[in-house]
Length: 224
Image 1 (tube, rainbow, N blue to C red):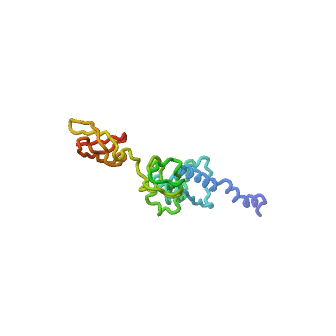
Image 2: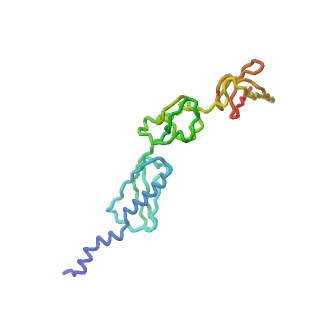
Image 3: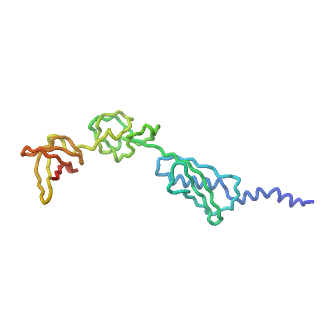
């Protein structure tokens, strides 16, 4: 006949084994913290899988978490939870959904207005498939000029803004002409509006019309 002590140990053994094993929920929390930190600077949401609670692993004092493949940190991917001391490795699936962000106007604007930072805000596109040409960076918009008016709440698309004109029609401009072994500086009258980096025609004092590239300082460079 088995002793009462033996029977008690037999009943308690599963509980003792479970208590001595690695806590799967703790590992999931560690993985969740890792993914949160990795995605902190990205407009993305994620969903972690679950570890098999039936696994019986030795307790690890310092488990580590890393991407299963650092080159694939979006879409359907995974993290690896590892314990070098205990000699085990677990793979936990992660699904990452990138949010499509876009800029909208915070107020109504008219054609020719120069946009300021307070005129725009970044919001999530409710339907990414409709986000074609929508600008997603404030640096691409602030200081730019509206080509046409738009109401508050309108998505800002790339064809709605342009660089501000630094040369305007009938404005006197300095023309810098140059070629092999020579350079000339002269004055002329711009024939149209143009931003830095755009071409513009200039009528010189002699009546000759030249075409050159507008420089950031408003001068026009002609290369022969």
